[in-house]
Image 1 (spheres, rainbow over the protein chains, first blue to last red):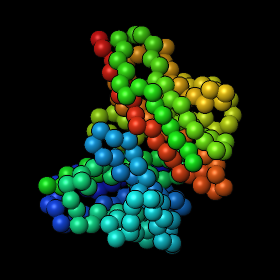
Image 2: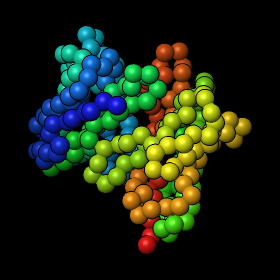
Image 3: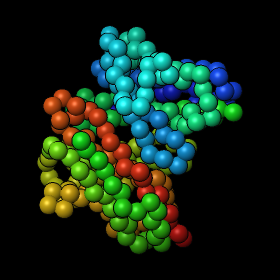
Length: 114
Length: 116
């Protein structure tokens, strides 16, 4: 399985500011994913990021709010822009396994917006 | 479209007794099904997966699940609960819908409490 790290592990931010979350994988992967887990809720897919192409966003998520970069096969960033308290969540990145059937998840970034 | 319904938001068992976490799915195609576990303040860990092979799937830590197509169910079981099993469990579906087989849909989760 892949080893995934995320930075920061947690942060407290003021409304109106932006935070960039980093996701690093210990091996080259084609597809990376970003999820949001709101308090007490399940995971919701934000977008899929392939290296060398624009990220694909799920319904309800837009690039202006959640811009994503994917500069190489081991790294991605997710920015949460113009934050409001409703953005307080855990943000997780994941990668697809070599067989494509499952995903490995990072430890998550716990974001609190005040 | 695919969806997952976890029938219980909270299950409480005594240590040493069996565990049953229920999951029903809906999928237009041949689904892959997973159970993930999330311990407090930790990341998601894959417990087991079904990908059209044997219908009874064995996972880590003594957990297993049975894929029943006629009942569209994928319930998670363990014969004897341990205190360390206390966590949030997510049933997840991924269907092979023309190249989108990477897209995971999560259930709302079942919180398992294990009492001494």
